[in-house]
Length: 536
Image (cartoon, rainbow, N blue to C red; front, side, top):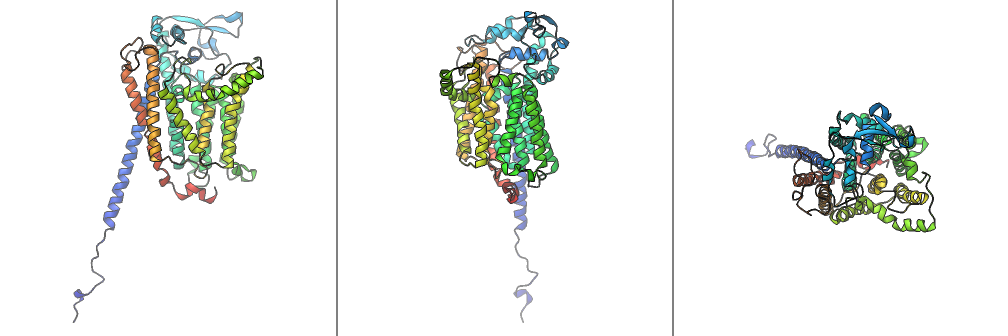
């Protein structure tokens, strides 16, 4: 007789490793979430410390035309309602002279003179006032100045506090817009956002975003509008919630309004961004598909209207295209400007900061340009005819607009048109070239390429911040490394120049860690998000 125990039975216990695997998988998932949260905190804190270091590292009035912008913030239109009018230029009622803190104009003792530190500006009494005709009177849209007027102090002695608050507000606006974008955009586009806004941030973008110059809003708004509109296309076929897509449309509109409220040429660039997005998605722009893509169409239409109307909100656009009444140049000038144009374009990385009196060392210019150009070549590895049209159109404007402007104004490269006026187009060109339509994102760099990009940017940013601090603390001829050795100017209550430099350098290194985190996003993207469910 055979014992049932001697043979196999249906009740026999079989080893089961499903539970341990499930437990390990759950633990791994929790650890990944914790890691991402910690990295996100490090990146955000790094951005905050970087912005703080740049904000405090230059004195009041140190940025280009800061005396004009600060005066216009203190006295927005109508100027007589906010400031005392003490006279008029040439007895012309349209050219008022307003009373503002004297410290705003104190930068005249050190600008354009690299060996002179900002120490001379402290000789002006903080309570003194002065009459200034450097105030906006229709040349710029007034929204930026009216909004920033909320930070104006009640006393002339608080002028530097106003200066720091406006700089901080611009940095915060940038953080909010890009943070919201990073939250709303599909995961496939987060890498593209990081490559463009971190890879092309040094030194020009980071400098102006933490300044009082209205160009800060343009540097923020133009790429934000492009990313938001492109994000609408990227989410048109997947299961993205409707509220998220509507939020992207709202972000695009707000970005365009911000540009139009700061500079009229910023509004023009937002319209260019719409054209670039449309060119890159021409098959989806057919009228027969308007119902399917009505939210995209609506967003693009509203941003276009804002861009066109805002173009006529001030005089920068007419000056930018050479319609300001200058005397046109001859063929000899044209040849000279065309041959010198590459230097103007390269000025995005190599140009001087401040009143064009703060040179960046080769550590900054060479390394940052290597990263930027390298990213553009990376983007050109995959081209389509639609991407070619979009990139070609932006590149055409980037090359033709400055030449035409200089020619119509009778000016040479280095006069009138500055690299910062073209920077939004450079950011647009980078975004278009790096974009990969099937994923609406971009291809990941290899780990080695990412390390090179990270090291180059960290070194470039660190030295740019060092040179900026040195320029105002001791003059450009001061000690080359130790910023504490010869301190002729520095704000009270702020950590020493060396500590500020170190904190800013470490902060940017933490911010740049995002370059590593976005490398792994592609593996997390669902098939529908990658391919557009077969519609792309």
